Length: 91
Image (cartoon, rainbow, N blue to C red; front, side, top):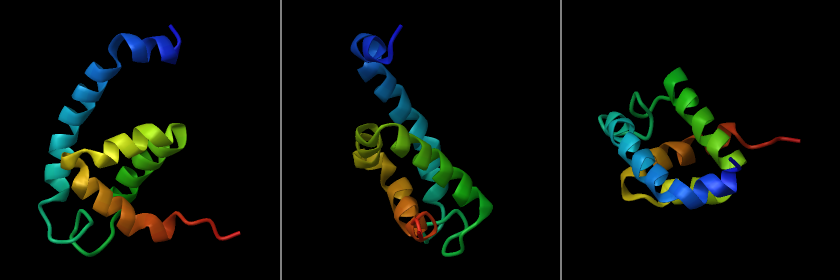
């Protein structure tokens, strides 16, 4: 089945499940005062989460934006924005 067909048949259900999966990660990120897992100090775990977000963004910008617009994704959005300095191309 093509991705287009899959999206037509169950796309919204997939988003519902994806947003449910956001809950524990957003809660985990919200346990500190800073945008990172360890508060204001970036860690390896932050870069692991960042890599997943970048993967989604590069596959489909619209899906990434939809994910980041969800109210429960605010901690992820803050973390992503705090990590942008490390993902800028310098060429």
